[in-house]
Length: 193
Image 1 (cartoon, one colour):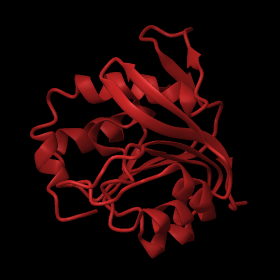
Image 2: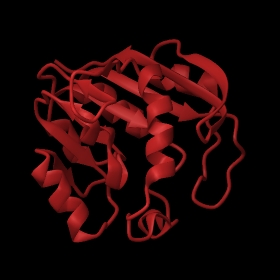
Image 3: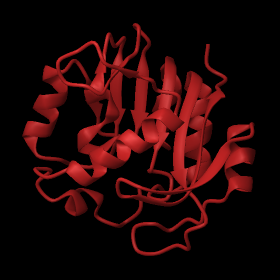
């Protein structure tokens, strides 16, 4: 991550509605289909798949999933203890680690999720390479064509993301539920076994 204080931006993590509302815009574009057969929809049924959410912050989409295999949030931020306890209660491991970390190569997952995080990291190309290396599939949603500013030091473009992911993503201009801007998204084949 960059020197920007991401955990400070989240403050005490008590009001995360805006970010969670945007996640529900990202999810279908990442190929996650709502499962309505539960008490608190929308929920996503992972059907036993293992997932690492790289940069998922204090309110990972994994919290909205059922029938999880191994579930991990990898994020270097320090959040209140109750955030970690919530993850533990929901069967989600919290790894305080950057998406660029070489130790990620020691693991294997069915899926790696990257959403609204690449502008914040030190090396977005390396984060994508790590995700591709450890997962069979990579689900990705990122905002593109935004000039760098504090906490967002990278200009992400469709061309760069296509190159890094080794495929062709979709692009769209969004203006719904707080999700506003030009976005890049898709489900891509990883290199993991």
